[in-house]
Image (cartoon, rainbow, N blue to C red; front, side):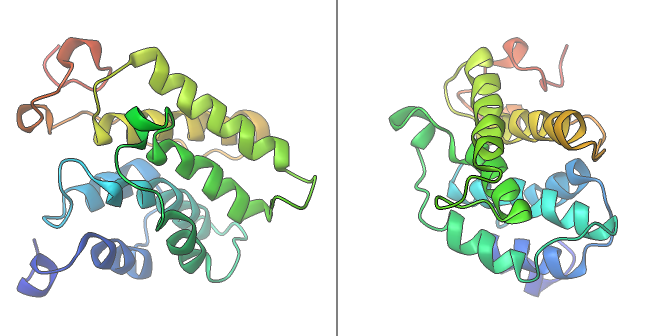
Length: 189
């Protein structure tokens, strides 16, 4: 951590600070930066906010038009997503962040036909990718699998290149449920 104030932040305070100060445009680098903050636990619902935050912030710093107040929309849409949805609901809430990001960006809603299909398509992709790899839980793995699929979706469906660097996991030694060689991000190959 940079200072004592940073060290004592909650995960959402740390993410909020990043949203205000970040000038980079690589969503993978942004996600790595926030996850390395000491407030972020190995697992937990704070991961549900990261994908929509880094996607929309990346678009903003690249000069794309994003809705004003998108951070508050992220907070409102992600706050009620509980931990454990990956196993209990069959839908990792970190993956659902892709649909949240796209719905905020496009103005999709339950009452409009425009982009209703797109938010479902992107979540189908993120959840499908997680299903390919399997479990048990790993919030970091599911987040970065979802982020990879989101970046592909934006390129293929919207022509927006947000390509970031490849994530390499540095958390495997802390995760007793790590699937090691079965994980595409496992650092020891």
